[in-house]
Length: 518
Image (cartoon, rainbow, N blue to C red):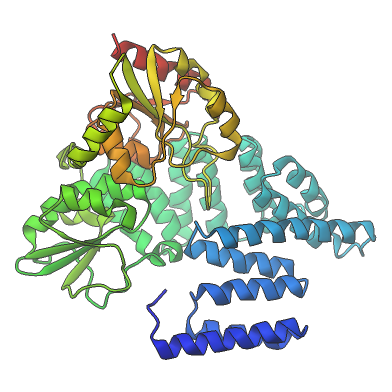
């Protein structure tokens, strides 16, 4: 959202107050008109987006309300108020659909009610119920793309990929989109060659299909075709969800071949914390070519990055950018710097923990009796949770048989895992509220065992030994070669042998930890 001047903010607040008053009088239509007028002035004004959702909910338009709350979460995934409101509206939608079904709706209305209930249950995580609820719509319109797409999404969460793939063979509609979705399912099944064929077919039908170009670029990068992969990866700039995170700069974006000498370069972290930590390695190289370099990064990473790259200036607010001549996102640096191969990239360690904090953690942990192993088994606990990537803590039971002291590196323990964590005597937990603190703790450990999350990249950037537990399809950055990472030399990769089966991965990681301690 743009920084608002006093007059604009006053105008928005006035419209919102009028909307609240009209809504309180039951005049939801005029109230929503006031909200729409405000959002026309500032589309990302959270209070108005939330107010729109509340008004839509009060008017009984629950699907519209859910969309409004999801618009808030798209802008700020950690916004607890929006997440709670969305969850409440989803439950209300399920109840509303049940009431309509009990009343015996006209046959023509049944598919819409079926879809609404199934979608709400899917978003609430009730996948079996969602599949059952979708059945009437599937029977009424067996080749409808939207219905089959929802069915495929539910089946994927149930680890029934083969059935999900069949859905896209039955659907009618946009063939480019169908091929793209088929490619995504095949990629998740580890059938990378077939997935790439699907993406290429999608692009032959729709050459400007940015999502398909980026998906294809990931497969190229995974296979080691780095130069072509990074060029194709630039298509991400045309994807609306990614462009939403762009810095609001009036200066041109740095392009290959542009001279940097004497110019002020703004580098910015465009995506997640893991990407920021992984691609921070290129900052000194870029800074060495520019007159001055400023880095815009997530606030939680600033202390660690400032200490590690003192040649740069740092900011955490991209809405108040200092003057600069050119800008570039961190993930474009391999292409811009002419270092497409990860083996050509600056190698770890390139991040520096704070010595005083390292010493504090050493004192807090006490005398070292045996190996210390940090573990992280789940990613962030807000927004879109990556179910296929994360483990349940109970699945790590074989690890705790290793002769070592275990320390949680989770910034947030998933609620469902808390009883298991409380019952595990050999698992120390600390409040880790910033990444600088986590880096200092890691410096006192012998090994990190984790899933593919920001923890893995932080440990790798510190040149820690890492055992990385990967789902079958992995991610483009981990390549196809077993065992090793081109990005982090001291990292070992342990990949699922069968989709969804973590048992073998955990056993391999435990054996690696046991061998390391000998």
